[in-house]
Structure formats: structure tokens, C-alpha cells
Length: 352
Length: 131
Image 1 (cartoon, rainbow over the protein chains, first blue to last red):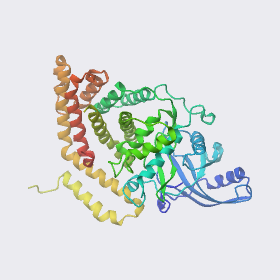
Image 2 (image 1 turned 45 degrees about the vertical axis):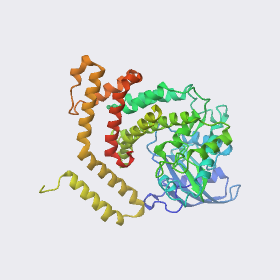
Image 3 (image 1 turned 60 degrees about the horizontal axis):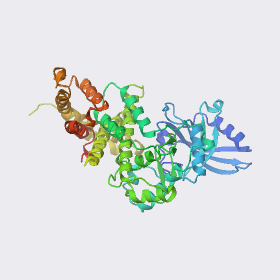
Image 4 (image 1 turned 120 degrees about the vertical axis):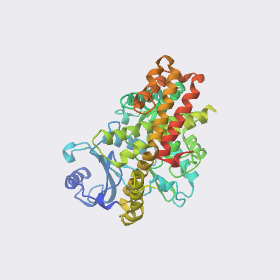
């Protein structure tokens, strides 16, 4: 799994500080005669997770041969709402087993004596994830409808996983009413800030007074959007970034995927900037045997912009007050204005 | 005519130097950081130019809106300089959350105000997003 296969950023290609410890652990886990690390380079991105490109040559045992992997571990500054690596590994295993196009998870290390942090290994898949390229360069996505349909179908496969799944018993149980619970969380966060955000309050009030009858909780990805999947040869090759997954209302994922804020260079293409919404919902319905109404779609798009606005404010706080001075975090905070603007636009559209 | 550059001119000149002179010389993997800096400089220049007006306009509208909301407390909301803006925003946010504007008869002035405020700040942060 890699965001761009051809250009790993040279300045980030620092050696993994505990490569020897990983090597010895692999020999034990793989019950191999020898494991040679032929490449160990940091992958770009990942403010929350630390991802490394890891190539191995294994002698002996059932793993004998060459492997192209990704090692995923916690970044020094984790975000509390994200899953632990062990939980994420479990989610990825369940999703992969459910037929979701995702990197195959291979080995998990919970032993903190190895590198001091949990980590797991997964199969590396080729492809491009960069949102502004996928939504701009027709050569990368020659058939947007087909890609959108595939993304709809894969989202439905995630949503087919129910709370009865024994492997995911460690995840936080679902709220009885996902919409109202998240609205209360967003309000509680706004109350912690020095400044107030009337446009976000208006959006939250609008959503609170129109909160839908709760849907049965399913596994939801919570960051299912363009930028978080790989496309290779025009086709979906992997759904990435599972660290926010949990139980919730599946319509939240649909609103998030189709929200204008994740359409990059093609805001008129409602399905993540790659196609119109119909093929996406068609793919979803084919697997889920259910779809969403226009009204539900727009309700959850308002919720998506509110959620992203809250996250953007949190990122700004990391920069301003959290001791993580960063241009990227500061700029993310400025997105709040656009998100407010879009919330108001959607609400006005619904008022007409 | 001015005799020396003001802040807006300095920022615009520095941004041009970054985009035209430095960016082409940067390695490919540093290009994103260069573009982020150029973006920040453009936002800062726009805020320098029109941030004061946005704050002033928002504070004036808020003072009027809150005076309509609580006529008895009108004297406490006469500020239009921006110094009281955090307090005014908080008062409006509380009224929204308390449901005062759930009644459609009260909504018009609110909707006009928040739409205008959001548009003013998008014009500073990312004018391309305006519709």
C-alpha cells in the first residue's frame, strides 16, 4: 500500500530507528531462517499514523520469498479518537474478510518491548490516492462511473458488518442515536473554545431539530472519501485509513463521501469529485439492498461539513495551543470558513 | 502615491518572489510546502486588506440582531468596533442553541447575518470557494 509508488519523498526516507528490532521480531513471527530488510522508508503523509514502506526477503518457513509491505505504527502525536493499532488491525481483518478492497493485514505486534509502540504489517498495494489528481486527471480515472459504483459497493460491504462480529468486541459500543450523540459531542467541543461559531451553531441546531430516526448501527469507516483510497489502472485498488472506524449510522459515511468538501477539483461531481451520485448509490444499493433519499443525503452532507469543521478547529488548536506549530494545521483551521459557508448553502437550499 | 511599500505590497511582492523565483528551484517534494506558504501569504494579505471591514460589519450586524432579540438589553450590545465581537458571537450562539431562531419568523435576520459573515470570511480565506 502506497500513496504514490514512484516518488517517495527523499527527505522523509530516513532509516527506521529500530529496524534491527523489527528484523529479529520478524524472524520469530515468521519462523524464518533469515529475514533481510531490503527497503525501509517512511511514506509521506500521516499526521496521526506513521507508515513505512518495508520490503523483505524471507528464507525458510511459510513466508519464504519476497514481500512488499507497509508497517503502520503510531505517530508521536496521536489523536485520542483514533483506534489503537491493534483495533485497526482487527477492523482491517474483518473488512478484508468481508470482501472490502483493502490492504491485507498480515502481522500485529502488541509487545511494546519490541519498538515501544504497537505496529502491524499489511500488504502494500499500488495506486494513487491524491484527491486533486484523481479528480482532475482523466487518464487516472477513465471511467468515473465505474469507480464510483465500486466505491459504493465497497462501502456497503463495510456497512454489512454488524455489532455481533466477535472480532470487533473491543470497539466502543454504538450510541443509541448516532446523529444526536455526535451533535452533542460537537457542541461540547465548541463550548471548550474561547470564540463562538454562530454559523456552526445554526447548522447544529438545524440538524438537531431534523435528526432522523436512528438507523441500525453498522461498522462505519468515518473517513471514507476521495484521498483515502488507491486507484490503480483506473480501478479501485484499496480503501485506506481505517483509524477512525467504529459503530455508527451508515448514512454518515455516505454523507461524508459525497460532501462538497471532499470533491477536490470537481465540486460538481457529488460522488467524491469522480462521478455523479447515481452510480455510487447504485453500487451501494446492489450490495446493501437499500439506499438513501435525497433528503437523507443532504442531511448527512450538512453533518459531514459540521464534523469536518469541528476537526478543523481541533487541528487549529493543535497548532495554536497544543505545542505542534505547523503551517498545515494552521491552514486547516482556515477551512472552517468554507465549511460554514457550505453548511449555510445546503440549509438554504433545503429551505427553498 | 505612497513612497514606501506598505504591508500588503510587501506581502504581494514576497509572494511573487516565492512563486516565481524560489518555487521552480525547489525539489519536487518541497513544492507542496512552498505552495502552502504562498497560500498563507495570500490569505494574510487579503485579511490585512479586508479583515477590518469584515469584523466591523459583523459586529454592527450582531449588535443590531441582538438588540432585536433582547430590546431591554440593547445598551449592552452597542459595540460595533470588533472589541466585543467574541462576546456578541457567544450571545448569538447561545440564542441559536436555546431555540430562539427555530421559529421561522425570527430566522430572516439571522440567516442574512450569518450568510454575509461566512461569505466575508470565505472571501478572505479562499475566494475561489465563493458561489
